[in-house]
Image (cartoon, rainbow, N blue to C red; front, side):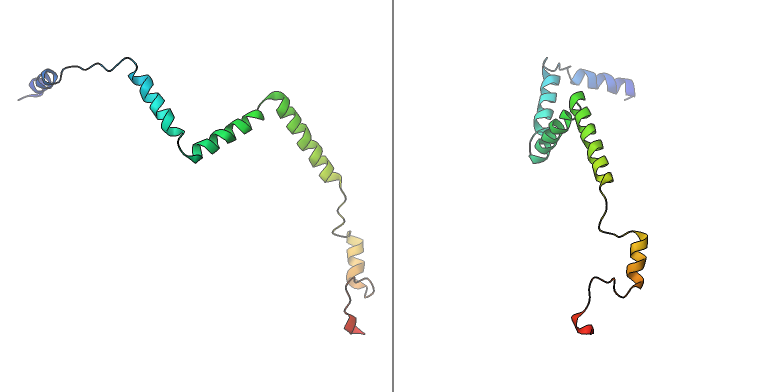
Length: 106
């Protein structure tokens, strides 16, 4: 049996079956329904909606303005935790400038 005869035999053995009209739509609805089952898709949906709010122009402008103002405020605050270079040098060489003394060192 050659390929042409085999092809004709297979065509005759399997009559064409037409799917229902809504078959493709139903398939995509079932796929979408299975993607929303579980906690991960729900968290992703909530996060997507929350972050979607920041894409609105007024909210985006307000957020950027607030971040720039916060950065400027943090940058302008003096840092009192570390002394300047001169003070650090004097504290390192002066025996009287140490903040923590042992009481038993007398």
